[in-house]
Image (cartoon, rainbow, N blue to C red; front, side):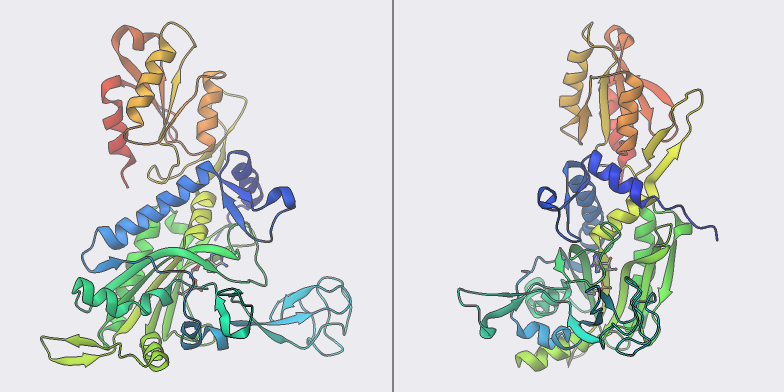
Amino acid sequence: MPNQPDVLEKLVSLCKRRGFIFQSSEIYGGTGSVWDYGPLGVELKKNIKDRWWNAMVRARDDIEGLDAAILMHPRVWEASGHVATFTDPLVDCSNCKKRFRADDPKIKGTPGQPDGQCPACGMKGTLSEPRMFNLMFKTFMGPVEESASVVYLRPETAQGIYVNFLNVQQSTRQKVPFGIAQIGKAFRNEITPGNFIFRTREFEQMEMQFFVEPGTDMHWFDYWKEQRMEWHKSLGLDPARLLFHEHTKQELAHYARAAFDVQFDFGGTLDFQEIEGVHNRGDFDLARHQEYSGKKLEYFDQPNNKRFLPYVVETSVGADRTALAVLVNAYKEEKVEGEDEGRTVLALHPSLAPIKAGVFPLVKKDGMPEFAEKLTKELRKSFPVFYDESGAIGRRYRRQDEVGTPYCITVDGQTIADGTVTIRNRDTLQQERVAAEHVGEIIKARIGS
Ligand code: GAP
């Protein structure tokens, strides 16, 4: 299969220049692998989260929404297995002081042994024995910094769902099978973060836990696998760049009985990488919380008069990683027929585009700016619009192409005469003339979701 081009560096620069994504605390030299979303980035990410929430919660009657707190009782993370097993083996180089994962393929020889060679400085015998390092961020609750007051920033949102399983089930009177979904921040002190927003220390997850009767779990696992792949395609991700990766026994997380990743081809050396995990978690989590809390978490099946601990099928996707996939997938540099200068275009699915339409008066006179401003105001009631009257019209089109705006509306001399405007399509570059009073409805219908 041909390798997709590496567009990451160009994207990082476009994202900064146009206000999608900035390095966190940049004026202080930046914070390691933490990023801020600018005016356009926050819209893009919100659109992705809305698409997920609509598909998972609003369009169905068997999934309920939740927004659990980031800080939880510390026992939660003992029960979940994160305190004991959410760790990576690390080695340090005593010469250059760099730190690596012990399984880093760039390490030559065996860490801790004379032949262990540092991938950074090239010295032999300077790598330490592997030491386990927990990925959870620790902090203190209350005024006293002592071990009794340690709390963790959650490394996944899922646990907030498990501890609320009965609250949600009983308050909504849902019957198994049903799911609970939430979107929220998660934190991991990653050893090898990087590749822009691909792997960061603070990120957002969109997770759904589907509670099912034991024995039906593989049926639901297959169901959710397919549903989630279809969702990624519905965002406009190229199907040729998407595939499933089944976890081997060695790859399975401590809670999983079976797992598939949805992978996307990010191009360059990143190649195919996980964007979402679909996991059959069995009753691992509910059983552990039942054991650690001493509270029964069984579901009562009234028609069959029996109690059982449901199994869980989880779908877990990163909002930031999806945003990166969407951006990489959309980034194009094109030649334009009849023009010397090419164009950079973000061919974003219209439902994800931060700005849905640009409105331009062709020139700054003859009543065109007034007409265009009035139209902008009207359209803003329905979707985000950018008004631009500065510079040559071609340049204004290019500025919108680069941020993925699917439609540009131009108010020209004919508009003043007969009330029509042109709509230019970002992808085909075709222009059509329509009555200004219909332009809002036309674009709304095309944006879809
Ligand atoms: N609750 C299960 C869970 O958290 P995971 O495979 O560790 O599973 C799920 O994470 C998704 O969260 C990943 O597929 C990825 O999209 C996102 N994710 C995980 N760690 C991340 C990080 N450090 N930076 C950005 N996204 C991350």
